[in-house]
Length: 69
Image (cartoon, one colour):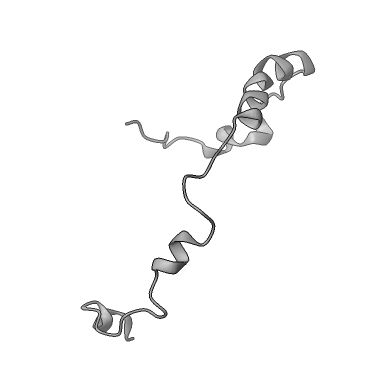
């Protein structure tokens, strides 16, 4: 994995970059159409996870002392 440059962060600003011209935007925008039209189908019914969650959080958490400040 890489890391962010530690130099001038202003050079990374979206405002300082050259915007795409309309033709280049259309060329690069074809992926948006693909993602937009990709069908997403859930494999569970609505409410599936809610039925499996407890009514409230447990009171016997080993981390409880850390949350008292």
